[in-house]
Figure 1 (tube, rainbow, N blue to C red):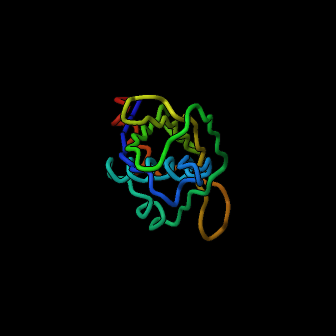
Figure 2: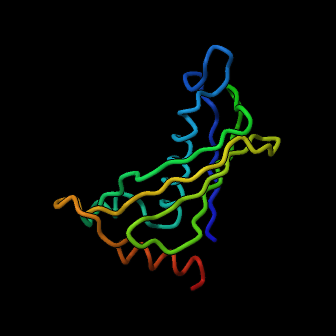
Length: 136
């Protein structure tokens, strides 16, 4: 398993009048975790796009367990557990500073050739990095 933790502070505009984070922002937190993880391990989105491959969202799932509030410091734990083929699945857990699990979920992205719009296999440079990190 590959894991990376991102830190986020809840901003005012992400909350409702009660100071509770709107549910849609958890998906944004997932995206932040995913982007930071890919960058950290040397496979940023921009490199995939340079090779003519885009990664649209195929599906999103989120279980909301406990609310986050304005000003809280959150930890977004992002994990990869398998080598991607034509899709890549990221798993997430979001915790507050007291280590209370607030939300967990997953996002599945497809690999698509930008010019043809057709699904393709994961780029080799990406699978090589993930294989190394998974010690395969």
